[in-house]
Image (tube, rainbow, N blue to C red; front, side, top):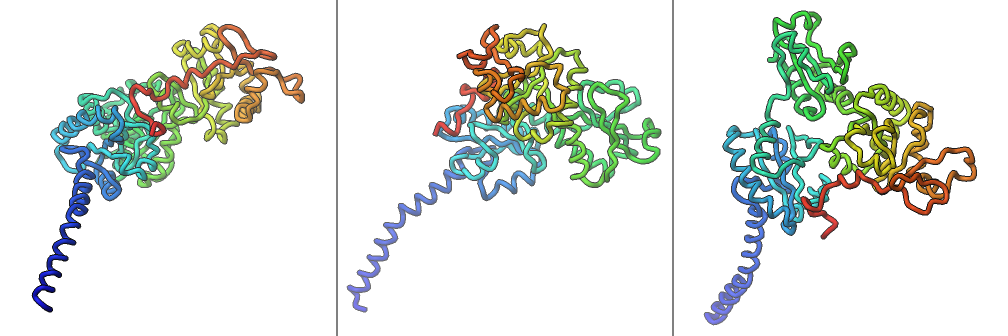
Length: 423
């Protein structure tokens, strides 16, 4: 090759390399941005490291954020402060990690965990997603306190038989007796307790003071609320985590739940209509009857409606919308998140098929239709399911709508979140 041709070829190679530099720099910048959108002590999650981080740490607290969301931007420095404090508090590897995930970049992971609002704060414990997302105060101190609570022993160790008298009888309790805490069986119980710590209280008696309770071996039992002589013994293998966890979940997570101001937002986010029994706090009988009919006839409707009880003396606002007061308790109503419908006669809740028909009529649109026009022609003797506007009972020929839902107002607030559908 002639010298001139050789020089020309060299110049062409240099020219091509120079043209590639901007693209190389762009790729490098992209890679840096991908791993440093939240910097410092926060672990940034992505599709490559997500499962490893979640599975290799006891507790992982994840901030699912979007950079365009102003609430996410406001929270970033707080999460950074929290991550720093947590690293100082929990120095051993594998204990607690504060992490963040950019939902725009990691859309598949965001969809996997049904993230529809930003920022959403979720906690993973031993690789499992906690049932309840974090909804409390968004401050460093509140976050650190919350994570300390998650790392606390989920089992209360009883020292003497007298400690049994200190158990809160209003809660669902798992009570166990073990000869020793240094066994695989006890480790399985602790793992189960950690998973269900938000749903049940766990107590264990170990040692000489509980010898009479371990004559036949270690024991685990469930004690329903407000009872002392209705303990339910676990009969499965204590070395089978899945079996024990399934049994405990069935006992600790009831078919019928109580709605409170603390869990109302969480329940509304499940997106299912509410079938609610409003009752007086001391009316144990009506709550028992409601639970019995739900367990007997409505288990199959669990995926289409939430069965709830509510202290009617506290939830006076929904009663007002129904034209009722605490003097009218107990009452049963459906809240569809658009309107509320009153069950005509609460004393008929035990009648086979009555509540089942109410739910079917809601989903078919019959409740709304009959509210305006009275019973369908084929049911001339049927009682009208009532709705009210103010103190006026609405029924046939009424042109107004049923009362608006009050529980829909418990859904996540636009003052705290940006929603996915805002994009």
